Amino acid sequence: MSSRPSRKRAASPAKEASAAAAPAAPAGKRSKKASASSASSAAAAAAAAPAASTVQASVLAHAGLDRVPAGSRGVVLSFGSGDISQLGLGSEEKMRERKKPTLVPALADKNTVALAVGALHNLVIVAPGRAVHSWGCNDDQALGRGSDEWFPAPVDGPLGQGDSAALPGGVAQIAAGASHSIALSAGGDVYSWGTYRDASGVIGFSDTLEAATAPIKLTTGLPKGVKVVQIAAGEAHDAVLTEQGEVYQWGDIGIGRRFSDRMKRTKLVPQRVAFKRSPLDEKKTAPPKKVTAVFAGGHSTFALDEQGTAWFWGPNNYSQGGRPNPNKDDLTIRLPTPVPGLPPVVKVACAEHHSLFLTRDGAVYSVGRGEDGRLGHGDSKNYESPALIAALSNLPHGDRVVDLAAGECHSLVWTAQGRLFTFGYGDLLQLGQGAEQDEPSPVLLQSQQIDEGGEKKMGRKVVQAGGGSQHSVILTVERTQPAPWAAKPAAAAAAAAASS
Image 1 (cartoon, helix red, strand yellow):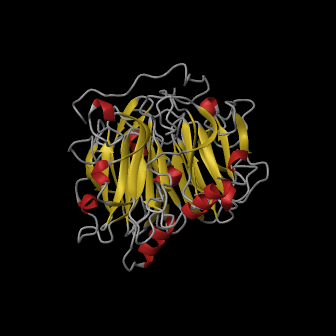
Image 2 (cartoon, rainbow, N blue to C red):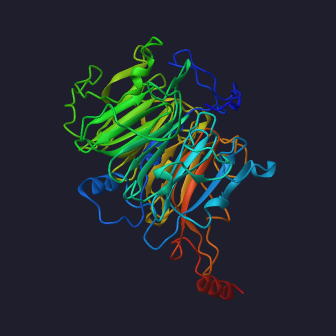
Image 3 (cartoon, one colour):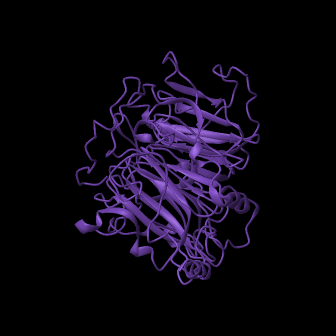
């Protein structure tokens, strides 16, 4: 553990009042809560993958395909509040707050192919070699290294070296929680570092460690020989999907249950999640024979089956699990339960109090706590059942949403044509809209760093994004051709001449 005092910010009571029904009191907008935009953070990608084994092919398939196309270079930008080093722009006072996306200089000459955003720290995968770099708050060793936390730098050990004899194929996926990080090698092995917390404080990292200062390979809890193909991180828990389609989890699981100090660390050993018929499911949906994807954020976990049904377990005090709770008697759903009222789902993003769903036809639904407009419905109401975000349907130029992420109190979605929409809490500039204000409906992010600038500079496409407690980070690539909505220089000149 760091000897330095914790730099957790005080809560913002006006913005994030705790509800009596909450399983653990929320720590507020400026707290070290997990964004764990696991839907997108855990789904990392690797560019120019070498010839892969069956396991490697499965790992990379679950990674969501390459974020960065072959021949392109991934560029990282950040915005929001960075006074706890999470922007990666340096310690100077003027660089601790960014209203608009700003290039992260330490990664400017590198090809970043994936990112993961935690509450107050970040991870990226850098090619060639697919090594992990980190930056941000390191109070609980979540960076996996000891060097300057204000700038991105490789984590310690083989993960920071990338594709080497010690780690063939490098790192395929990454995910970040509040005080810990997790990574998956191309060979299907899980590594983690930092520490896990619950409402009472630090649980620890393992039976013998309070915190892991560098990545450590997971060697217990999973059946011998079983390989993992996908990882996801919540605020203080992790979930993994095996090649057999089973889900294992560890960390601060069993929300709402009391554990003695002697038993607390038993939660740090992976446990298989049992899928049975849920008593809350009125339709008596058959449990999935095989899970195809897993997502985590806050204290929530979601899994998808082959039919695209989303299964949820975790706190449901704000209906973040997608189920109404009229009697407030099911504050925690302990058994995986299908989310009703949704078309087939392909991706989920969740934070402590709200969840987002992307369906196979490109529609976006949200549910849970609506304060600050984080659900994108143009209001601040709570929604007990998933509701379509109408503003993200029928986008111009044939565009459609392809992915999404959930910050602690804000949301981000991006499209096939590389446009990013943000909404929710914006007082810390984490929406990138240039103003300290909330946005109750999705707003297109526009800035000089990503917008078109004519034939010589066509701008950048957003290919991945993530949100933390106070900041956001995006991964972009240069456009290779003008966007459909960009004015063609010749056409614009002809139109000007005709009107003169």
